[in-house]
Image (cartoon, rainbow, N blue to C red; front, top):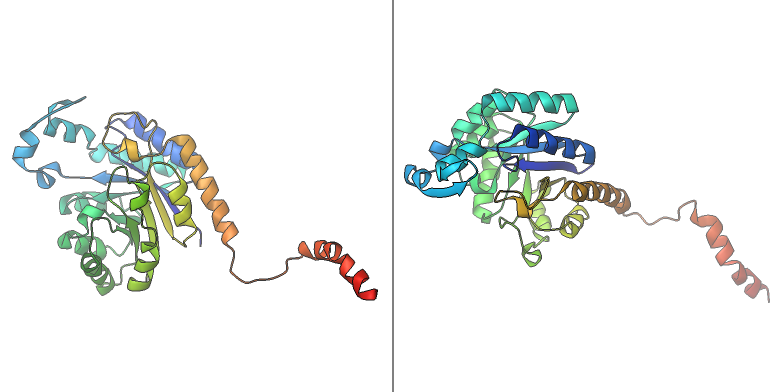
Length: 282
């Protein structure tokens, strides 16, 4: 089974539909399977006090101005749905609250996503699991108990899911990757496991691809120097092309683990071992 490649646009569109469409194009050109967004009801996710606090941004001087500037509403998501359909790529989003999950239902996406921060939000987990759609569950900042509770909720209603090994630092240091956790999660919870990476560069994602992951998610950007908290942990268009291309090669190269002499080796073996016949005849 081919690794399912998710290009996480998240909030890297900076509230601008033309940037958003460019990022969708980048994902399509690279051969990704889906693009992903994030949806928040900012009045539920943040306190009034926080929203009123100062923050300089392209949209104004408060946290509310910045958060609202980054949030797409119904019209924008209708445009995204239409554009992705035209381009032949799936899209879905991680909801950060139950209102946002209700909002996303109108678009009937094929997949759901539980963000690492939300794996402890039981009401949201139950709501997503009830939809019965294949769900990617990120496991950053989580204990085995947190993950077990989430797995139990999804299994109770037979909702298909896979876990994603994640370290929730932006960007993640290479030495924090702990990729062996991929095997640990697979063995412990008896399910498929993907990888959601926030590192700089591609090497760690290549290594994850060689460990039998079923999905790979990376944040994408047009330019890592752009405004935004996720840009530095994102990959640019050329990097995405390289990553998808290399991961598809790695998948082919892994093979089935059975040792055999392939047809192309037979004449080479004959040639390189010719002198052994000569020696035995002497």
